[in-house]
Amino acid sequence: MVRTKRCSRGLVVLCGMAALTASLISACKIGPSFRTPWAPSAEKWNAADGKVFIGQPADPREWWKAFNDPVLDSLIDRGLQQNLTLQAASLRIVQARAAKVLTAGTLFPIITGGGSASHLNLSENVKPDVDVTVPNVSVNIPRGLDAILDRLPPVLQVTGKPDVNITPKLDLYDAGFDTLWELDLWGGKRRGLEAARAELDAAYAGYDDVRVSLVAEVAATYIEIRTLEARLAALRAVVATEKKFQAIANDKFAKKQTPETDIHIAQAFVGQTESAIPAVEAALARAQNSLSILLGLPPQDVRALVGEPRPIPVASAEVAVGIPADLLRRRPDVRVAEHLAHAQMARIGKAKAHLLPSFSIFGSIGLAASKSNLFFEDESVRGAYGLLGNINGIIFYPLLIEGVRLQDARYEEAVLTYQQAVLRAQAEVENSIVGFLKAKDAEAILQKSNDAANRAAELALDFYDKGQVIVSVPLFAIALQGSFSDRVLLEQGSAATNLVAVYKAMGGGWQNRQGQELVPEEIRARMKDRTEWWTFAGPSDLRTARTEPEAK
Image 1: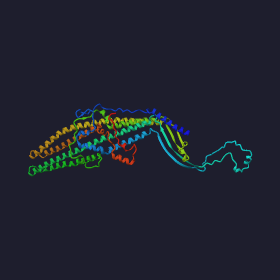
Image 2: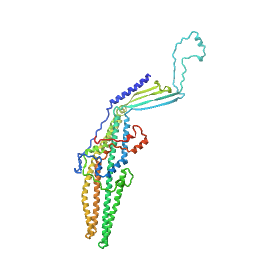
Image 3: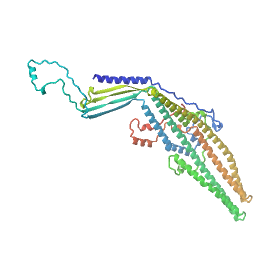
Image 4: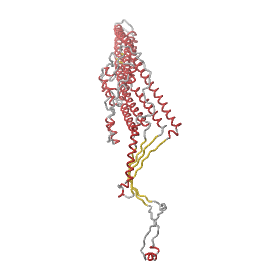
């Protein structure tokens, strides 16, 4: 009974000391602390003209609505709900969250429990050496009885050492709890948890990056579809004009007013223009298939989704682009690189902790008895506790320091990756701004030429009908008309696509996911069925709705 109380009291004291020690060293974390690395950033956008692209702070939360196209709005909403790549990115968040929980678990004691009931049957030839000594006892024998004892047969005489018979069989009943707690004296485990948290932040930023790319690709593909539809309409209009000329030539030939060559030349021009239509139709089919995949649908005719042909989308007259420094907090790919650098720096501290001695507390308490009816008695309590030390970091220092150097070199690589991401982001914005402005310049020039070509074709047809010009004049004017109309449409589509690239480069499109459930309900239901989650770590935890501020 006394030993039981001492054992229990010792375990309580040891656990209390461990808790006190942990609280005293909780602020100690070996290794460098993370700060966002420096990255080269320009003060302003070189390509911004101050008219279309202005330096006011940008808010590209739902930038696609600047095109004022309800069809585009509905397509992006559908893509955000159904795109498979985006759903895969949301599951990477779930994986990172699970990894963080597992890492956090290493900070706490490992507690195991169990019990057993066994019967041991030892070999007959395995017996312990037992020596039983009977102490000398002084006995007063009444007078006359000693003579009677001397006359007893030898088998009935009392000896000084009794026989001891040991059976080779044993029953054992045992149950209890064991614990092992490696103290995080130097903060190595907490550095590991810091790295896991940074990787979770990187997973969120990676999801945002996929979201930015998705909305931009849906918008760009939609613009491509509208551009191809407009080009098809323009080509068919040119064919109609050429057929009109062919009818005039046929009529004039019937009246003997023009040679037969005019008829064949007109037919050749019609065939040449018509031959360009299948290539544009094929490109349109490919764009529609791409849109289907972006919406999480098998390749199909998406006319039910995009509706009848509409004009190429045109955005508002002004675009706020802010300053280059804004990209550091808005671009998800830049934030991914920053979080990964943070995780890598935390691993330096984790590696450094292996260089120092480590200490673990162990303890065990339970019940053990050789008979079941004695199992719950006080005397059946067993226990043990103690402190373990490890100095491998000192013994193997030359080897383990290379692990620290490895993590440090990886951190420097992560810093360079972050800096490169910042430079690439700025270059993408500059390129897309230039692309938009130059496309608009080219469109303005071509539009004037297209107007002139349209007027020339109109006059040439009338002059040919009146016999005032030869066949080559109207045909050349019609061909010129078709060429300029197609180039105007291409530049219109290019301008719209470059504007989409501007918004994408500025990191727009992820902000409106805040407060939304990232993992679809169908996926959560499937995971629940497979894993039978019903505890506090159940499927409700998959409804990740993290809100991350744009600025740190």
